[in-house]
Each structure stands twice: as structure tokens, then as C-alpha cells.
Image 1 (cartoon, rainbow, N blue to C red):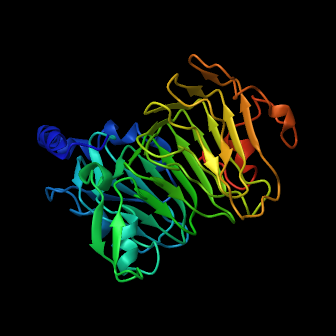
Image 2: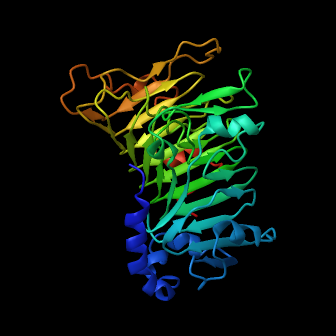
Amino acid sequence: MAINKSEVMIKWAINIIWLGLLMHSSVFANLNRNTIGKKNAMIITVAQNGTAQFKKIQLAINSIVLNENQNVVIKIAPGIYDEKIYLKKSHISFLGAGIEKTIITQSIARDTWRCDHIDDWGVATFNVDSCSDISFSGLTIQNDYGFMNKEDQVIVCKSDSAGVKTIKATGHQMAFRSFNATKLKFEQCRFVAFGGDTMSPWNTTNGMFYFKDCILEGGVDFYCPRGWAYAENCTFITHTGPAAIWHDGSVNEDSKTVLVNCSFKGYDGFKLGRYHRDAQFYLINCHFPANMSEEDIYLVPTTNNIQWGRRVYYYNCDKEKSSTGFYKNNLETAKGKPTGNQINASWVFKNNWNPIAE
């Protein structure tokens, strides 16, 4: 469910009297101690009431002039930030005060955006391109279009041959969208949309994405990484659509999406996942609810060449009141025959990145 702005504004008003203390307190430090401790880190503060260096997150980003050895931490005070963010700078950490306190929000339907734009740059609440080593902690990023627009909308659309287009409430609604970025790290964050592709970190060539203790919500393929992705202790909540998780590993045979100790929730009959391209799924110690469909992760009929066959692996997963056990252990069929204990972030990213050590 999307964040209720009026309720959050009340909470924010109560919290704002403590703002001066929060900017230097353990509320931020406890969320990501390692980020704050990065070598040569420059601290930039953002608060809507004018007590920090900047009132807007985008202005804080625009102010950064990075040198080769510098890291930047942007500390964002409690508040609802009605901003569309664009980022093309590396070595930046975004540190909020908690997922119920620091909220970045927009209302964007991808189909509407593409009527006036040639590509997806700007289609999400948070847009990232051509950078690396970005981390996020203690904040919510949401696209509330589908929550605010329950009915389909017919709009004038210059890019459509008919001149008009129907915008569905369940269509693609990205909260986070990255293109050529890699080494993106998310801890204690929440990503929310009603429609599809909520969390879209896309880089099939060398994309590496790490999630820990996060909540992800949305519609069809709302968690859809391309490349290498690792998610641990995360909760996936399906609001609409035929499948929750998706993966594209079509460029490199080794690329994969790995979910460890994750749980799923959703409407009655929601399906776990699907893929249209070469993909590789590992689900380890995951929990599925009784109301989830008994259908396994499936290949959507496609003309794409699936080079490496079906690669969907489970280990020690469980489902309430399951009748089929489609998630039975089958790691021994995976290339290299990994064990359940072996599958962790280090195994996924190998020597290319160690997000835990950062």
C-alpha cells in the first residue's frame, strides 16, 4: 500500500522538533555505520524546513563535484520529498531516517511518460545512469500512480499512431530505474508501486545489485533485475499482475538473481515469477504463503532464443498448505552444484564486488 501523505505529514510534524538532533544522532548512524565511515566521506544534509544545507535532494546531488578518491553521504531528514531524482554521479550514499520518515515520492505512469519522451530516462521516481558504488539506507522510494488512479485513463499521446492511449492503473510504474549503473546497494529500504517494474535495476552486462532487509511492493515483474542481484531478508508484496519476480541474465551465463531468507505476500492466487529471456533464479530458505499460486516460475512464450535452458533452483524453501511442492530442493542440478550454505553475496559477485565489506 502506498504511503498516506496526510498521516506521514502528522508524524513528520511531531518529529521535526528533533531535526537538529537527528542530523547528528544515532538514528542515521545506526542505519549504515560503514557508509558514514568511508574514507574521505563528505557529508551533505537535506531538510525541508531549511535547517540543513539543502531543502531538496536533487539540489544536494547537483552540488557535488567529485574527485577520484572522494565519497559523499547525503543525509536526508524526515519528510515527504515530492521529487523526481536524476543521478549520474558515483560514490554517493543516501541515508534516510527510516522508511516511515524519509519518503521520496512521485506519480508517474511509464506509458504516459513515453508519449512525450523517446526513452525511459525520467520514467521513475529515482532515475540512475552511468555510475557505480551507490548505496541507499533507511528510506522509502515510491511511485503512487496506481494507488491514486484506480481507473484506466485515456490521454492524448503524440507517439501513438492513433493519437490517444489508454493508461492502465496496473501498467508499468517504476519507483527505481537504473540503466548502465552497477554496484548498487540497498539496506532497510522500501520500494512501492501498484503497477509493474517497481524496482528496475537494468544492466545485463555488468550490473551488480545488493538488497538487505528491504520491502518491495508492486505489480507484474515488480522486482526485475538484469545481471547479478542478491536479496537477503527481504519481503516481496504483490498487489497486481501475473508474477512477482523476474530476471534477465541473457548476456552472461553466470548472471543470476538470488533470494535468501526472503518472504512473499500478495493477493489470492498471485504467482511467484516468470522470465522472457535467459534467466537464472536461486531461492534459498524462502517462505511462500498459502494463498500464493502453486505454479512454478515459468517461461513466458517468446521468440527470444533461450540459450541455457530452464535454470530455476530452490533450497530449503517452504509454502503454507502446499499441495505440489514445486519448490523442492534441486541445487544439485545447477551448474557447479553449489550447496545451500555456499550461496551468499560473495558467491554471487565473486571477486568483482564485496558489498558487505563496504
